[in-house]
Image (cartoon, rainbow, N blue to C red; front, side):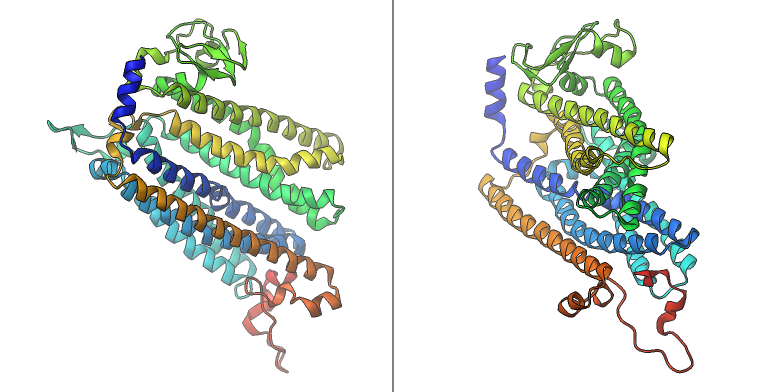
Length: 494
């Protein structure tokens, strides 16, 4: 085993590590924005619909402000997403050159959805002051659908990398006779897609609600903060147990379709029945587990609903065809953190449901709002952990059982890749810093507009004079006509 490890280390291209680090950093950064790109449009329109149906100016104000944040987030996503699209071709030319014709349609679908979403966001922002209320709303309804279409394209590509199909190989090992439908709808696509979509909705819901939970803890108990908390938190609370079941289904799909990845996630060294479940710990090179704690037979029960279920172990394949012990430990920890946070969130959702069932009101405990404020951060951690589990657990394959990561990597020098990584880190710090600064500036102006202080208004322009909100309109003519049709517009509520 030691000689095999030494051989693998010597055969690893020197540019592989910086290429992996560059891809990991950009993906880990971009994925923090994905929940808001996929799910914030839906939550915003949910609030918008509530405002129109109940003639509620507070709900309309929240929807309009969330739409401004949505636009800023989308602009940042343009930058990080563009970098990723270039990296696939620049860092992994071996994969794109050989397999691009098979699974590349997923990236095409994502690109179409991206441009459609950009147009729809522009129409939505434009329409607050210029369209009739219900016309404005219905024109925005395709926006969440465009976001779901983008997620469809990306997950189709990723699920193909995990369970590739829809092609034949010629004598030189090149793919031929591509079946696009099979390449998109792979065996693991359904579980992975719905697990991802619900994760995005749940994460966005908890993050948005967490902002208003912090406001509640700071003494802001008005209807604005209550409604801003209740709607997104309710969406997230309803989806939390659903996500737990979807996650269980996705893990069982991995058990059937990627048994070696499952073995890495669960620390299964040898193929056996009555396999125990390990929570955390560290896998050693001899198959033993250090630290953590062990639950007898549970892994077999979770995989096949009975202790006699046979679970494939890591040693069923050669060391060259499975994750290293370090990679297995990383995938295992990421998976366990994700499951642990999901379990705690179910308790938080039950607390919320119990309060509504008994009192028809939100819980009043400060501990509840502390937990709610932390839930959004915890969900972002689970998003990162889910990505780590999916990608690290597949090692050493970039296309499962068809191409190794080392075969796909670029031939560019390691030094140049390290330099690019340094530049990207600096640029991303600046970009995310600018994003945070813009959002905080928007929050400050919204607060000034809400407080209505004359002195504050003289010192800082109110929301209605900012580029991201309705501007002040000239005085109407004597005929009573209102410029821009704002007499029909709910956006002026704030």
